[in-house]
Image (cartoon, rainbow, N blue to C red; front, side, top):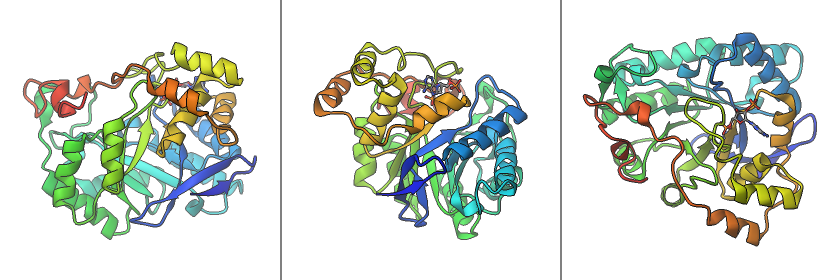
Length: 328
Ligand code: A2P
């Protein structure tokens, strides 16, 4: 792994995606604020993050943060904080209502317009189900869920890469079984699977599967997404992590992020607070010892993001077990 140096000399290691060769900083900033904080506050957070050395940003058509992220990037360029957009790694995601073969390329073009970018670094299928074409409400109405036609949707994702609209393609919230289904039909295999991962949901099985199949795993909600509709304080309040943090003079957030980094995955952490953004970058010049890693590996496991918003009596998944193919 190589590294890049931000203006404040925080060294963020990188991973070169095999499909594109583009280097992905292993720590990126999430932009899904829940409840939403408004465009100006989001743009200012992006600018501050770029000043601190963040170069990897994660958004989604669904988050409402594509436009302020694009505005932040444009301003960072005009202020000379970065010399070129190529210095950044930008990911966005295809929403369920656009997860239909003929809607994928237009959806990506719309995202690029919002971001004011000519190309993306990574385009992900947000969830492994579709919604009625052109429906964008969230939560998705039960009657609007549809099974995803992996063949046509993945073929259109591949078109996005061939057209140069994105450097790489991948998925999010996919189980081992669903990854296997995509790999079986793919001409271009998914470069990344972005899933919940933190010390309370360590994703051991999925990580092994991804590693064996050349798919890079990226962790979202590494801190448990405290304060959001889908998260809780269970990571930040975990006693085992608190004890380790206290003994090391680090914060629980830093212990969780360093642990995720040590597992060989990418990490997307969300903070719009300058101090916490900075703190979250300060995880690369120290390490967890074997005893600490062992203690973390013994923490009882359960999903925080259950996917309950994505089950439906009428849809492809009637229970959360079905979404994850029993990998609970
Ligand atoms: P804030 O944006 O006010 O900093 P995740 O990355 O798991 O999705 O978690 C995001 C949540 O964790 C946000 O509510 C964010 O709040 C909070 N957070 C981010 N970094 C830290 C930190 N270093 N210490 C405590 N809370 C944090």
